[in-house]
Structures are given as structure tokens and as C-alpha cells.
Amino acid sequence: MGALMMHMCLVAALGAPLCGAAPVSGSLEVLIRTPVRVQRGQTTTLPCWLNPPQSADGLEVSWYRVHYESPVMYYRAKKFENASQEASYVGRVSFGLKDAASVGLTAGDVSLKLEKATVEDAGDYTCYVSSEQGYDSESVSLIVTEMGTAPLLSAVWKEGNTVNMSCESEGWYPEPNLRWSDQKQVLKPKSLKYSKDSSGLHSVHSWLLVSSSTEVSCSVGISDEQPKEARVRMENSPQTESGSSAAGWVLCALLLTAMLVLLGVLYFKQRENRTLLPKESDVIQPTSLSAANKCYVNVTLEKTENQYILIRGSKLRDAPCDFPDGQKVTCITAIKGTPGFSSGQHYWEVSLGRTDANVGLKKSWWVGVTSATVISEKLDVSPTTSNGFWFLSSNPDPDKTGSFQFSTEPNVLLPVYSRPGTVGVFLNYDSGELSFHDVEEKRLIGSLTATFTGVIFPFFNPGKGDKATMEILQREEPGQSSDMGNSVDSTAQETES
Image 1 (cartoon, rainbow, N blue to C red):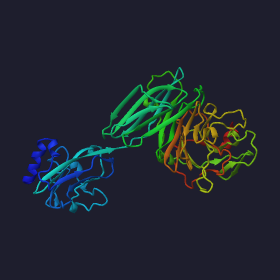
Image 2: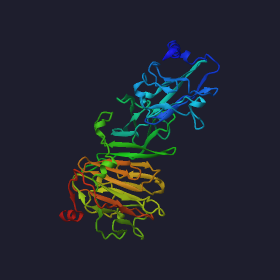
Image 3: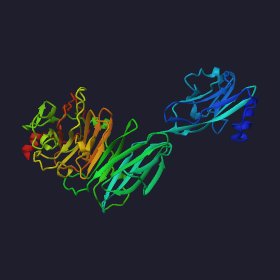
Image 4: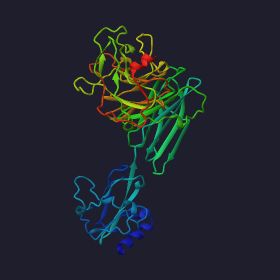
């Protein structure tokens, strides 16, 4: 590389401090801005320029890391020399602009443009410039980040009115911070463990014991980035369930942090004799929306003479009348769908007013499944998982404004900051999964796990007081899955029973 390059190598060999020493000549000085942050996979620029401004077109410019003999980028005599370039940077580096006003190399801007940043790219980069009058170098620190998955909260009910809560998240870089808290204080975990996969991304797992009637939050994040958080509020003690009751559930807490709605997942198991640390195999990972779409089935509303709801085709709403149960949403406005299912995987979608922007989205609704052959209109019957109702509801109750709730025991309230225009419902009868997706946003709202027996029917309730209608969406050519299982017409099922 010539005498000048040999001189540079000598300086580097004498130690890093000398590389940042004052230039040999006052006519050449390197300036930088550091640190630089970039998300993995994105493009960034490491700023480096000459002071006073002068053309660097004919100068020797080298960007290197630890090994100066294998530069990230080497430029001399108005051309790039790639013979000794570090292999991992081939095709990903070039000269960039330190800011929008820069005119580039002719004004002394020798910034490094780096494309498709990887975890391995993180670290210090030396910007070295040499001319016949002197040389100088400075170091720029590159911080590569990757935002991991939303926290997965897992809980196991224990004796003594306590819950073993664990939190895990993966796919982070650098190593993230995990914090537990309730409404009053930061909580100290019983365990906090980190691991790293083959691609260099970090995972974190932690657990602690909390009261069964509390609000718990687990946030995971890296410095200078908004953390991802999962939060849930639990009320009352869990009740013993039997028959085709829910064995547990998974739910996504919708949280507004800054201007970003983030998702967290929560999994519950009923009280059992278990070790304190939940097993990862206990958590059924919810089916993705793309996979669920392959199992689409057209669901229709059963024929009914219910005077409290109005039905027109696949649309339904509450009737304009005086309800015997007041404005509280009960089974008096609920209805089943058909067909029913006794095995296989099935998916359908429900519009909550997305087709009429002037009316707005529904705030009061139930969507899910039921094993009931006849829906009771008795006002003292509470539809929960213990008596064959598995559904997600949007609660307009002023005392529970902006909350989603599952028909589970104990009650669990999730804060809502973004209402779905369309809810996708996925039922995997055989594995016991019932998942709910925000179709427009393409993300999971929550997922129940249960042991289903007998025939399970789609279940709907348009709620009360909304201007918007509920519509069960139909497709002309529904997709078929490899495991559609058995479906049963609602009328036939009732006749048989």
C-alpha cells in the first residue's frame, strides 16, 4: 500500500491512543460524530470529515476496525482497492454523506455508508485520512439494535392466593433490560436469565410470585428505545372448572407506549401441583393470521325469533326496544352461528363497523364459540368458560372503559387503545386453541386454550347501544385446509340432541 500506508500501520501498532493523536500537520484534521445507532438490517452512515474543508478525492482514506490490514473500505488514488477488504463488508460499504447539506468527497466528507447492518457490525470503526501534508484518524462507535418479540407472560396458579408469573422475550440486540412492576412499585424477580442464539440475538427469561388479585407489568427493552410491555389485571380468585372448561388461556395486552401500540402475551393455567417454574412446553403458541386464513369457512347466523336482535343476511344488531336486563350486555342479545365443529381447524372474520367510517367502530360486542345447543335467556346465567362459552368481549361499562375481557374465571381486563375493525377468529378444535386476531393490523389480540368436547358453534353478540352493526364476513371461494375436520349444521345438531 506504499510508504504512507506503512506509516499508518506503524501508528496503529503502537496502540489505539496514538490513532487519535493530533495530526502531523495542522492542515489536516479529522472530525467525527459518535456514537451512531442503527437497527439491524437497515442502512446508516458513520460521519467523518476533514477540517478545514478540502477535497479528499486524491487522498488516502481507510476505514478499518481492529485489523487495519483488512479494511472495511480502502480508497486511494481516486479509486477503491478491494483486494484486502474484509469479506463481510463486500458490497455493503461506500462513501456516504454526513448530513443533507454535504456535497461529499470533494468537500472533505469521507463518511462511511453501511448497508444491511448486522449484529456483527457493532463496535468501533477508525476513520483514517492521509495526504502528503499529514494524516489523522478518529474512532466512531456503531451501536446495532434489534427490537425483540413482545413479552410472553406465563402464569401458574399456586396455593395460598399467589401466582407464579414468568416473562420471556427473544430476538434482542444488545442484551435487553427486563423490569417487573405493579401499580405501586418495581418488583424484584426470583430469577433473571439471559441466553444468546447462533445469530447473536439475546433472549431473556424471568419469574416471580405475586398476589392473585393485582395488576402486573413486565417490560423489556434496550437503552434509548421504547420498551415493549405486557400488562394484565387479575380480579377474584380462580374457580375450579370441569367438563369442557378452559385449561388455560393466552392473551395479548394492548398497551400504548409513547405513540406505539405494543403487544404482550399472557398464558394462564389453573391451580395444580407443579414446580414453581412454568414449563415452556405448557404454552401453546397461537397460530399466525396467515396460517389461519388457509382454514376460512363461511359462517352464517342461525334462524331465530329473538325479539331483542335484528338480523339482515349476515348483519346483526340490537333491536330498538326496552331490554329486561337494562343496558348490561347479556345472552339475551346473543346468537349462535352455523356450522358447528367437532374437529379440525376453522377460521372466520367479523366486521365491527369498518365499512361505515361515518358511524365508527363498535364498542360493545362478544365474539367466540359455545358448546351450548340453546342459548339461555335467563338473566341469572353468566356465560363463562365453566358453562361452555369461550369468547372475547369489548366492554362499554363506564367503570371498565376501554377494556377487552375473556369469558374466564378469574376476570382479566386488558387496556385497549386501538379497536379492531375486523376480528378474525381461529378455532383449532383438536389442540384446544381459540385465537383472536386484529385483521387490519395483522396482529394477535389474544388466544384461549381449552379442552373442547361435543360440537362447538360460532358465537356472536352485537352488544347494546352502538350505531354500528356487526357483520359476519363471507368469501366467495373460502380457502380449504388440509385438516378441516368435521362440521355439523346447527339445526341438525339441535334435532339430534
